[in-house]
Image (cartoon, rainbow, N blue to C red; front, side, top):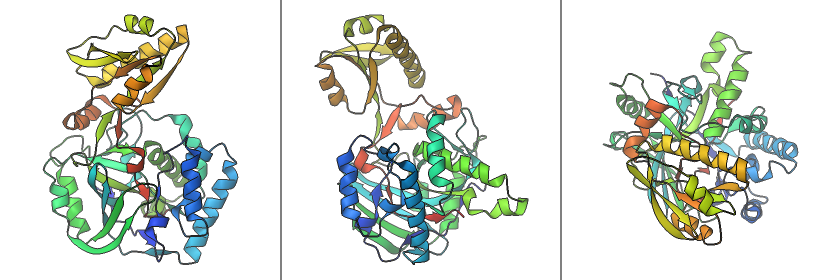
Length: 391
């Protein structure tokens, strides 16, 4: 396997990491106050904020914002804002309310990744990719000289064999993150090739060589793949092998990490007749879910094959809304959902997918339905810190 590549990672040379690091662009997409405060904190200072397009601004003069971000990337490269490390990985320890989550920043070969349903590549998407969400991201990336990742890949290592093989080197950064992001510490990994061997040993006896599942940043990685496919059309064979856009920077996290919270995303159906919705929902199975109507809970059957149960549920919701009107929202917290239903609508509280079942489900069934699971709260998502040249 050659799925994992050892990158030359870019870090800010002298910038304050607390000001440099900002949350993933696809978070707080309805909270202008959040991003306005980030903009205020980073004004006139070197920051990843100036290199990204928060998705809340996709309909707010996006072309101008994209051009400004690309220009800032060029300026940072020319003015020495970045320093380029020797080949290697970075061990990232992120302290949040959920605990300390540990990941490894590395690069993957996009030739070994597919977001197509049923793909048997070593790196696979976990949820259905919404193709309409890719073109705006392509506009952002196609002229960018660097990438800053918020992609988080999951790997299946119940014995924690990869992290125990890591040999720590110098500390590269250690800082408080803005906007209640907790703390982050980055340490250079001295033995990247040994770590790669440990990763590959996880799938050595597996026929399908399924190494990484996309946990966060599904559409960002799909965009990187799309841009690479467009780029390589114009390259010769020897150029394809070495082109930097072929490799995407990501953070790999063990799915069994104790600080990685795997939560179901529940359904809130906004309807004027909750009882009609509830009476028509004919779920079956030996598992269980819950309905919340006016804040009152009732257990209902649910398939043990949770993804198929969600597919059936989502199909029923779509049909009901088409015939009766209303809307659906996707809610992360159980208690939050119950409170919403006290003032109308009906909530479906879904059972969680076990971490031990996650990789087998993807391997056997392809992509999960959209909005099946979430990993942590918004302020726990990956912050942009590291970067890599892509041209």
